[in-house]
Image (cartoon, rainbow, N blue to C red; front, top):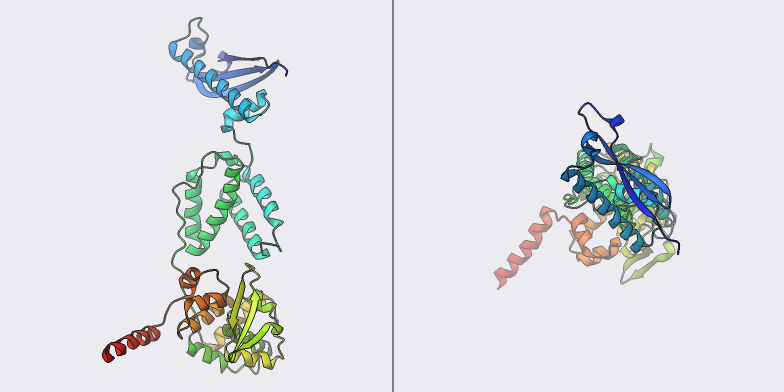
Length: 382
């Protein structure tokens, strides 16, 4: 193994003196006859520095820097990193982390997860990561070094998100930002977790759904002059009768419907998560399937949600109708007619009842009164 020669020299040049009479302290590292100058974050009086007998505080400072470089060299040896002047400078500047920009971090992470699209990740989720990246570039300079990102940066980002979006959306952004930066932490590009002490608040979901009266208004709405809306209404009512996400409705396969004890059951796999679900088709949904001979009049998700707004306006309904609202409507219909929440979770394709309870379950007053009324009647009998 070749021997490494190493020496340190300090300079405080009179030519770089400022108005206050001080100049930056420079360190010259000489390794194997390769010299590298580093400006240290210290300014001294050149007159005091250049005395034959330097003041004790200057000697102590020089010894401190010399000791720091010696420790860095020891760490480089432990990590098996070549001992070069550039490596020492990088270690002194970033604490041993790799110098990588936010733009480089995002590009690398998105390149990795893009390989999962179509396998363990749907395109919509990847698209959200792209939106998160664009937001980061808006708030933080893309050329900013990842190693310099700190807790104050993340507090500011979360503050902006909460002012710009609803709690659930801002929380979703923060979770993805944390995922990206944890990748940097795992790769030793950041030494201190910038998310320490930050708690992401998802807020309390506002569970909305179409009531029985609102569904009746839609069912009896005269759309004879709106052929395209008539087909969309059928899609709307069918989705509210089966509870699938629209992306799963697009792939609806009537051959997977089976009849069990007079109930028509549909088995499928959620496109978003790959989780299997077993849902029951409510009676009016079966009529719609018969109307189209099992081939639903599918359109794009964007057009679907746009046309739903038109139906909402024509029906005079205040609740904003979206494809996801119809999934909530299905869950509400089952829950408020006494179906066990674990069964509803299975119908929706949830892995447990927590998300079903938190996002979809909100009993209406009549159901609460009815259930408590049953208990009171039981007491009277006793």
